[in-house]
Length: 368
Ligand code: SF4
Image (cartoon, rainbow, N blue to C red; front, side, top):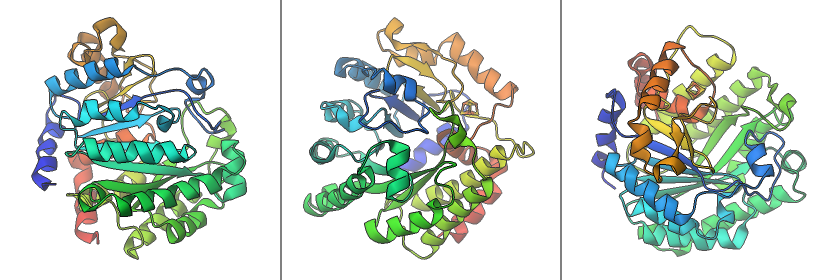
């Protein structure tokens, strides 16, 4: 894939108005785990069905009318529980989506591989990254996720993803990234940095995503994290990158993405410490949006405010995106100096804010 296809999105990042660069779409509230740190537990408990394929088709068509999408993440619940997941991916892929990210608990083994193979086959313009979640060594992971044997099944899923990648052929394999995702909580904070290294040694992921537990967690005491442990986790990932043990996804501008991640982790830690000295105005609602299972479109996963509901506008995103409420919310987010630790928004905030560029430039020049 041509780097220019990505670089063209950079201009959008600095424009005040324009289409969203990325969307998070909650495709289902159904889940076969019950993670105690889950911020989305109410929707999961209700097993909210996500949008129909027809609604997603309307959504993808309306998003494409606004402009090309750089990134879509399917959230949940467990996305691979949806048997029609490839059809949802195709709605975006057929309209030139560059990157589709799917986090998974790795507990939908056979169906996951079938779905991925179809998505790779049917969306030749799209890079697909699948990240399997781990929350610490087996006993801790299984306890946090409330799934006995869950760690072993997630581990086997990563192995299966590698097997899949080795047999689909070069053209498909080079558009497929295999990641792991770890979330720091009070219960795993003493083990997670070391376990990250163990997972990388054993499972050879392309990348590791680090999350700090957030939001309205099912068990809120899990959010009470020692930030020194977070810094250790970030440092552990930095070492893995330096040692070449995390090759990162092999896509154009990967060096920029790596430098952005490092700057973003620093920013998240500052915000978590309550340090507002280097505030970055939030781009949520301007560059990105989250679409919940019931059609509610919100700037992010955290704020609890909506631009509107797609069910009221025939799933035409443009009518909400260009509406008065969206504009009002965007102004409010900036005026109130809204800040949080949600990594997805902070990654954009670091990338598209001149104040963060010196740090970003150092990261790009120093990146392997
Ligand atoms: S700072 Fe956080 S809560 Fe505020 S709008 Fe951005 S992502 Fe949402």
